Length: 356
Image (cartoon, rainbow, N blue to C red; front, side, top):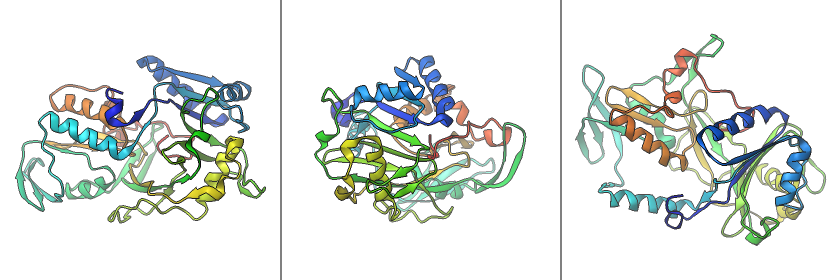
């Protein structure tokens, strides 16, 4: 938001919609928005939700949705341009970015602190290490000698033994090649990003049942059409990340996603013929409770282990910097590692998405 032109950021808003089972979840989120002054509108009740969506999209037709949380300041940015802008701003602050360096290991002293980082370009002596490597964090985690399994205490006091610390999820995404202006609001504006979770049966346009279980989608206007995705696929705990995958989806994904678009708006009826396999999606690395870990994991090693990296990491970076300089962050505190032992866990999501 500070420089939308450089980041190619579009502040179009974001709407999360769900069935009865998500009313309490989104109501709680709306309460947090109010506490921090983040502008959003909570709509509950099937008729009220339908009316809210019809004002934006006159052809809206998704049945059975009982809650909508409309964030007015959300949006999206084009990834490559945004990353280049972030790098340029960092360099402008005097940061040196060294590309193509592989971390091979760490040397620790008797206290467990890291004294050297072993890299493909030689050893680096250090006083402080900050790790933020996205889905590659399990590899670095292992190099630091941290556990790949742990016992997790729930808020009720139950203990689940030998849980996997990390699980990989494949993010399924695709596009339909249509005129981007097809997806506009009633007043002709660029529409908000939409995320729909539904327990209504999902059918293709020719009447074939896709699923009668809980399903979800998300979509937005893109440069050359409509881009979005559906619920991710759980993968093995030792999934190979390199070369990083960015295009494969489950064979059933195109039918499901296109059917879900048509389910929401009649303008997308017949869009399956325009489906396009695109370089999108990828793999995320998720913790045992699907929420991030932001914490010191060695005396001088701060780990930013986010479950699903995104633009929120800019705000996370600001909070981490405050902690590294001796401050306290009430925003990061709930994501400390010790929560798995104390039972101070985050609520279990009622969404098919592990990060919702």
